[in-house]
Image 1: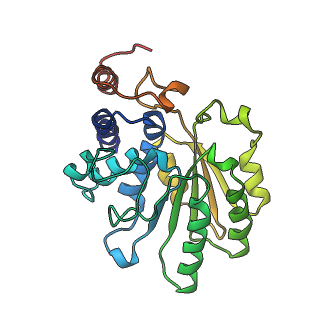
Image 2: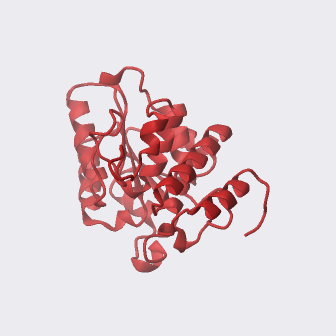
Length: 263
């Protein structure tokens, strides 16, 4: 698993550099979560009855594209067409670009409401599919999130797993300083969710939390570090928007390969 996630992070840096696009910190933050999800959890072999994954924090699309490529579900050519003029993949997800990209997203706060509807439809069909959605912590400030949070337990959606990439950095600062949303675990518990809080970079803990049994909708708060894996990017707000130049890419790969402890 460690090497798989390393490959995902390297490909994130690769396409960020090709496109000179922002959001590298956000993509690196959730790489461990997506790696475990796609290689240990999601059932994708039977496409019609596949598990559904929704990336609600779609500005982290590079992480999803790199993971789909590592899984063999997205070609290298298509991955490298990310954010290019006349390219293959947009900066935020578009459901028409790949069969495993489930929604067109970008405007925050929509993933959980959509996932709630999908999970409800699956329950009505008595299908064994599950719906997984990954949100950002800043995104959890959106009102639409809390409308869906009230509805999901009412519908008894035990096939819905929601994850928050809680790196405590959003576009303009610390999430918990910009808006008072903590204790977010207690808030979801009050809405009658099953709530877990674990290290979002510990692969064993991630897998265990996602697979744990519950009779309620599940919320997993993954405590993460923005820019994880590249020491000079870690927990730095500037990497929400800074681009990956050739020099930055080379330096970042050096850190990923463990050849430097420079901060």
